[in-house]
Length: 331
Image 1 (cartoon, one colour):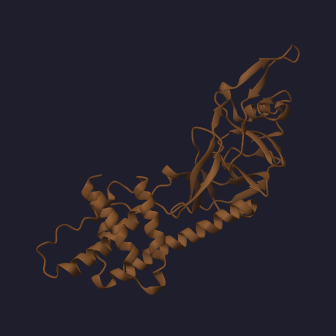
Image 2 (tube, rainbow, N blue to C red; image 1 turned 45 degrees about the vertical axis):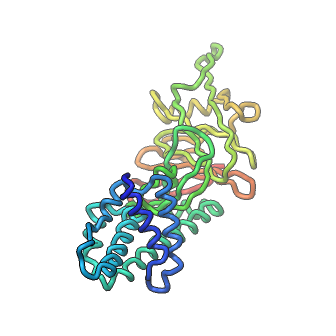
């Protein structure tokens, strides 16, 4: 980004802080300006935003001060639309250009209101997920975006209106939507084919599986990416949670789950290297809370620590936006 582009963005953020808008929106200016400032500092404002905000030169125009003010309003609206409302460069500038000058103050107020209303909803829904996870999962389509390593990391909680879905994703992946930041414990994926094995005596023969566990700590939410036949091997006791996300590479998902449930499977870092259970795909699903249906469904497992005690929760939903949802407590 050039110096001129950077100055255009910082000047526009400063303008938003003091812009004249309908009085009911005055308190919203600082919140939106702070969000834009933080995204600008993190390099998360689209590279095309500043150029899209450009209104050209006005040095030769009469009434330059008045023209400058209207251009500042248009720049502010374009910046908010592109950085916080996910509007494309091909959409935001022409849509803003047709707003009559007399309506720019009110239009900016409406965009401030839209962003802050979304933040209020996200704050409420995130609190519900943390305090009443089953209630949240039963009512809302939910997705979690994974990362390549396990550990505590900053995530953003967002709502995608096009998908009618809430997401928890790494901050760098939230895109151009408002988000509420929260530290989570992210559980990475390990391939089934990479698991250590030990040959069993004959009979019965076969191999014992040894899963690398991770102690979940340092946050009140455990997230991991969508389960597309994967299994969650876990040891859970009150405030203690050791877990592993195993992807069925080179093997049928249901078979991998069955193998992982063998009595001699070990989970490192768990007390006695013993797993409490394995949450995974089975057909038919039946009534076992540790089973989910793989075919024709999207499946998720999220950990929530409430009052110092961990719980694991599942959401299974039909593909597509607004599909039927089923949620339950695993452990």
